[in-house]
Image (cartoon, rainbow, N blue to C red; front, top):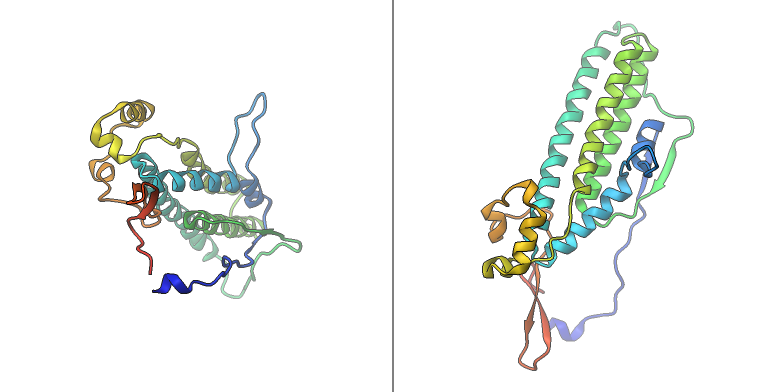
Length: 243
């Protein structure tokens, strides 16, 4: 009965802003365009664009898209742990300050504010990693300023944190839509064979992902086309039945 009383209500929107205090974090946000002598370094926008492609592929029942979303989710968690390890080292360094000295937050007098237009939860998780990196860089620069670390350690630690995010973004860049659905693999047809060849350098897809019994926490509902009684095609959403 609820379907008969649906109102014409628009989509929900919210104003989301990101504030960055360091040039190092801003460069990670922007990435780097490909040039004659330098390869492309994907930024956050490129990472989110690839996430959106994965999501569309997973919604079409492509098991490789599901596999890649799982790998990104796991890589986000591993990246978070790596940044926390750098932060822990900084805690040990800052603990060397004499108890009679107190230092406030190291903030830019003119931070950059960026609007966020992100539709994917894993995209937001990447933003959280970027803000954590921004804070780490601020702490590293402060430790250098007050003489707790030298320039070499400063540069090494800043680069170490940047590499964590770049590896995450780089993993997303390896994704390709396979063009095959789970029914194709069940039939072992030409589409399935082409998909296996496309991904052969990454090894065999885990069986539970291929069968659809394991999916990411952030995987979309699967939409399959079914022939209705009137001969038209209707959408079937497996994961989220309509209220």
